[in-house]
Length: 155
Ligand code: ADP
Image (cartoon, rainbow, N blue to C red; front, side):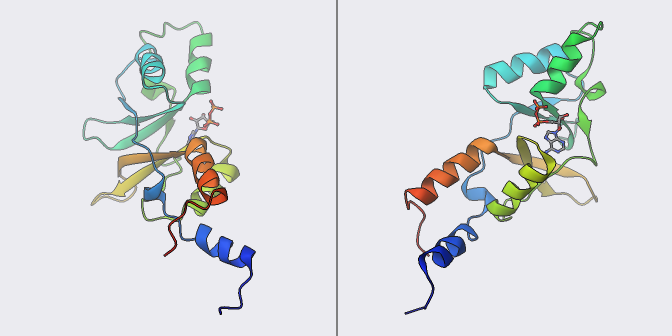
């Protein structure tokens, strides 16, 4: 008998969940794509956040729904503006790694008040990342349901 109560055991279980267990595939656009292209991708792929990559497939930006709405409200032609003009860019992007604890990523989503965080892999260069996944509030909701339904693997 461990002497731990139910809530301590639950909390320990939650703190064992890693990002890779809940992450989704990333949806990316290229930095030279137009705002119009990005809007089409967002609709077709049914996501709320797009990650922007350069020609080496490195993460250079993030595009939210409101970033694209804001760009569409201006006088500029959305077919002409490339997304790299309007995106949130590196190094101001909050990222996570696949081995990170899911709870730490949940805290980042709350602190930064954002909907999505790219899961990245380091490269040989500092602050240059490859995007391998995404963690969104939807993934967090799934984790919450699994916890409540006791679907977590007991390890
Ligand atoms: P929305 O803007 O549609 O409400 P978010 O709350 O996710 O969606 O985004 C708010 C702002 O934060 C946007 O300008 C977006 O580019 C930026 N942003 C979104 N995700 C990240 C992230 N992981 N790191 C840094 N900035 C981000």
